Length: 532
Image (cartoon, rainbow, N blue to C red):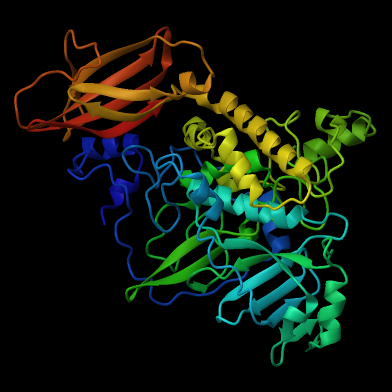
């Protein structure tokens, strides 16, 4: 594996300058990560929710890191298909049916036969069961609170499909309805009481858990059935540092674009519960070679839900704790009401509290600081925002329909708020950089898409371009006189590189450098570098 290929283009240029290798290799840009190394022995780990809160709120790992451009990307600035991420909807538009299916969408728990409960919990944020259906498939059942039927289950199904379309590894989630008679107890299932003491679970214990679960109009229980993901679970990943027992984990997590840009996705969906304990690493067997795959999990606290109740109005606007916020409340006696505290929410128990009027993607925060989110820069945010903006209103309605709201007003409201928050994301981030993307060479002409014009963040834009010859070994550029059109300069055969500097007229700060490779008579885009 060539480790330098995982570094940003600016770093690659520096490496080349000191003679460590060329800036571009013949197979750049890589779409897939190199084949992973076998992980060998891997240690499973647990992460305390309370410890994670204290560490990130007070110790703040990665807080003093010098900001660097995102790593774990190819020469186009894109994360590669692999253990963390896969190119999906923005890069390969998905049909409405594919969006609604998500990771699979065709294997819910068997409708016939019984579901055997093999594990249960009656305490915690989301009490529920682990079941095995008659086809020996394992699922995790989680429920809605009595006060808000459909809220958490709908959010979990919808957001899992959105994150799948955005490129992440997520579980295959289903809405299921069942009668109490469908559940049977497995052998020697243990259940912990409120004090943590375990005892053998009885039918009465099962029924007592179901007493706290709402029923639908037909008297059935509704749940989210999350199918067990592929691989052996080994605990969550962290949003900082490296996993020491994984030889493929070579980019500090707070520097990964797919984790830094995740902040924008979480803001859009109000996934304030986006913390390490809601992730999962598994060891996957790939033809005898084992590697670690990284999953996002547990989306019941998204949209307007906080899993066991409606989201508090503070959600996404302030950390659970901060000295600044505490001081403001103290010195103003709590009378300085922010805009989010004055928002009116419709009476939709199945939605909870979800709105767009006070939503500001640039100031949105999760429950407590996230090291990767704090490193998110303009390029990371643009990478995420262009994907958010790729969802049309029709596609959002299709995704929301998978939540199976019984109230059409709830489905319509969530679809509308998602579209409004999407547009706010686009207005906030597309113009932080020069929003040109999807570069290609057609014939002898460099072509691209202006996402600002496409999505209406600007009405018009005048661009200017200047071409240079680019020395791939030294990274030195030599301007080509008179080459200021979008046609690639003519040159004799052989292999060589050009770089096109594209700027908006009157704005030297925002620039896109596009590197074009000539191989005999073939022209192709080798890399992109953005400045802002």
